[in-house]
Length: 372
Ligand SMILES: O=C(O)C(=O)C[C@]1(C(=O)O)C=C[C@@H](O)C=C1
Image (cartoon, rainbow, N blue to C red; front, side):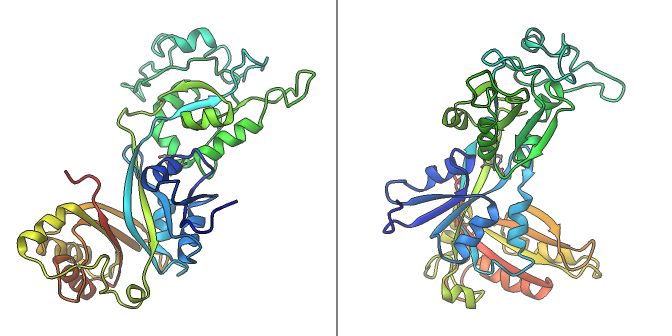
């Protein structure tokens, strides 16, 4: 039973997802009720409805870029999440594994697409000697995977994972599992859960069903332990520094919801020196749209941030949803929005942005976890 006295924090689950790890890094489980959600949208919805005090969602990965589902929820075309603000961030080093059933433990027949090409003997060899990364005219300098499978994977017919993971493990997948069907699921831990349900022995005492045990998941080591899965390969991401950034969401206070100029955190008047320091220590997310018929509209909007010495740390675009080939822009800057209409460079820049952009929305200010 959940302890109703503890604030609820929702995250993209099921448990053992990377988002769960980010949640544990940020919120002590002793004093919070950590609640898994099935989708990123469920996390937004729980914070918007105040059924959760905070929510955690993935925002971007260092190898594969933005999590478009999250950006689209911030773009909020259906006006379902008008009060969602970012109030924190968390960085998690992501080491992906290929999880499944080791065919030595169950007798699983090979996938004809893979068998003969990469049975146990050859997978443990260098991919160079197996011909998997042989240069061709089309690809004269193919990338080598950072790791090789540690078990036979030739019985795999289908791989489950979150769409973000495919792009993070491209070289391994292209080398060892080319042509194997991939199925997107809501998170990496959901992928592990599905593979755990696909028992090679089908749960039967007589040896099981013919097609069981042929699926695999790209997921974490923690998920392997939780679901009793075999680790068929470890560290399959393309880059050793693979990192995902997560956002902590909160609901705007009533005054913030009615006024674009309300504070992210209470602040008093400050000196120029204080302001500079805050710029390094905080970040702010803003979305805006521009008049696409107006040449230089985007340049004019971005120039506002330059005028106030606000360094851009990321920029993203998504379709505006209003008209084809029109975009919403998401800009992250160093600095924070402060109390009062006039106070601080972020406030001033936002007021000017309001004059040059077609529309804008402040999406929160939070502590920069990369500040030294
Ligand atoms: O949290 C998880 O396990 C997820 O599946 C989400 C997610 C993401 O969307 O970026 C999180 C971390 C990894 O980058 C891959 C997937």
